[in-house]
Image (cartoon, rainbow, N blue to C red; front, side, top):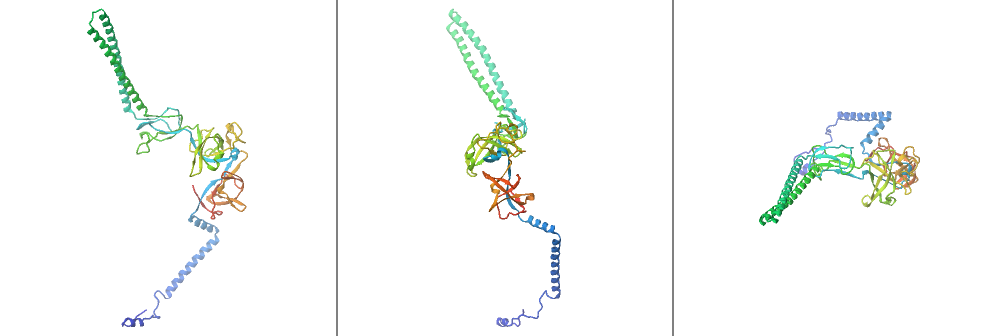
Length: 446
């Protein structure tokens, strides 16, 4: 585009025109040839890639997996298809909880000090009043020795005073005879009498001093005793909370203020399950009711239990009531904080030496291997229904979903019996989503 002339703006605009005969920059046969080569190369690459994929279906699958790994996986929450046998299958209520000792305590010192020795390790059984640890107490030993020496001196002074009283008493008796024979004046008799009374009064003072010295000995002994950490009850050491050389103080909450306990002991012979029962089903649980307890750490065995207490306080946020079930046949394989499942049996159930169903081992313990009446239950939120179809999403190998059709039976307290379709133990997806499909890789929430 060019401007001819140099006149005014009007003349310049009127003479403004486009030159059609000027060539376009970057044009010409060479540019067109380069663009043609680039187009041909791109088409050849695309054609080669399509041919390779068409010849190798595995590469297509690998590409799909690669794209799937890049995409964000759908997060799912899983529940288990539980297997229940014997009397547990007839349970009116099922609740989960954790084992705890009826008597458990973190044992600390009654005075501040530094640990001189820890005499126990984890797993050691201790009796009541056994020494668990010792704090440094050399200064208290010296104070106790001084208090005992002071008490010994008071005793010796008291003995000396008893001798003085005996002597003045004999002098007084002699003076009484002399006064009666008129061979001693009244003034001399009064002097002997006053010496005797003074000796008796002095003894009372020395007796009080001895009591004070003995009290100080007891005080020093108690201060020294406070340096010995003793077991308040018989139990097992389940954790060692402090080591040699660490400072400890009553109520210590950490390194800044000193540790508050040396060891933790628990009575493992009296274990119970602390579980939460939904408010909707608490009416089915009564104090003294029989129960069976399955502990995850001891598969294949059921323990006898009995409801020890229903805590008269509900949890508003969770809509549950806390129940404590005491184990009647706890063994050495059980420890506090183990996950457990409690099966509350019907009111007519009998445990122990009575009838608990088929497959009861010696001692009234339910063995699950080879027991008749094996039943599988599934949480209700894992069941999917549409029309007359019922299915579940099973999380299989590589965390991929698989749709499995099931046949359901009896419904109990948030769970449904699976008559056909599951073998028990499968991981099932809780909840539903339109995105679920066979083969979909998911991320299982912990």
